[in-house]
Length: 421
Image (cartoon, rainbow, N blue to C red; front, side, top):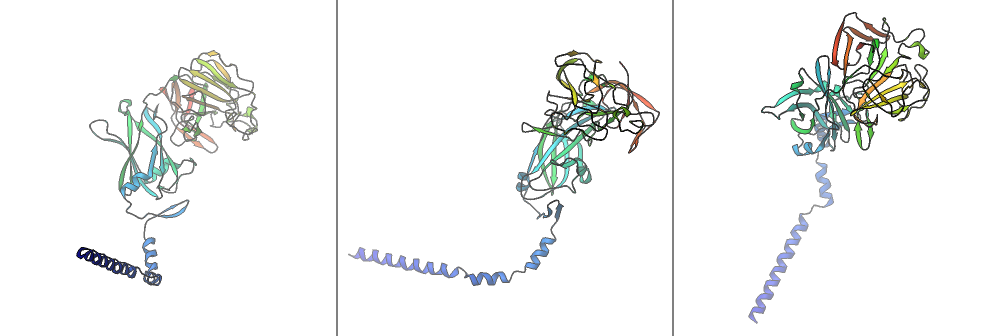
């Protein structure tokens, strides 16, 4: 009986303790009126002034606030990087140029202040930095992926945007080219390692010229900011740069003009009707004929992926695919399956397809699909280059001094004499 009384007393005591504790918790919760009173004491103007003092990124979406410092882990997780193809190497001007694209995506919600890019290799005993891009240098090579022409206003990586950096590194000696290149981005005093790229140091095949004669201008030829270099195509979920080393060959006269008379007829242009030659032995894989020539400075047909090259010939030579475009309709002399030799005439230079004046579009790629492929470098057996050239709106000013060059590529806006066959 005594034990039962004690147990009952303990139950009563525990119940009293629980009730008292619950009342204390209830009285500690502020009423709605109390919360409003506390908020009334906050100086919102002061907060706005503090936010106005924070660094801002002015971009196409307006002013974005950079609330530094941002934790390292957040910044690291925001940047996604990608390399779409191995770097390739061209030989020109007695130098070696390694070319590739680096894609960056700000996958987070915070703008990133992209301050510098280090390109280096530490596969040997020491870390060798080959190039550091900062400030305006970054703006020169960086574009929004969807708009490869217009430069960005600044180096701020906007959330949700994808960017591409067009990179070309120069080397005096081929032996100094590394097999891999590594990358570091410095952003808001944080250094991040991103994608590596494999370097292919092969400078490609040695070829004979696709045209012959004097004063051929390498319009849109290889350079880091030419139209061809930055033209991409999307296919099979990948990004391709088929025109990476493409050239639009235009013929000039001694005064530097590309036409005579009024220039309203294709026949007024010095390049029109010139023979187009096979640059290597190979087999004809594709031809297209029947596309009409355009009237100069006009396009007479709607341009599609199938007719962009106008009348063309595609030749396979080993693992190289050679593309000759914009030929005169009815002038193609070869057919699919023909075995051809270097120097064979393929057709006549015209103004068909995606063309406004007579020229030969020429490039070599790594696949038979002339668009879903990547451009490859090549070298001419020999050519004569004019040393002093100035390109103007009305033509070119050509000096008289020349130099003979062997087994190298021709760069953008060079003027060349090609030997005959």
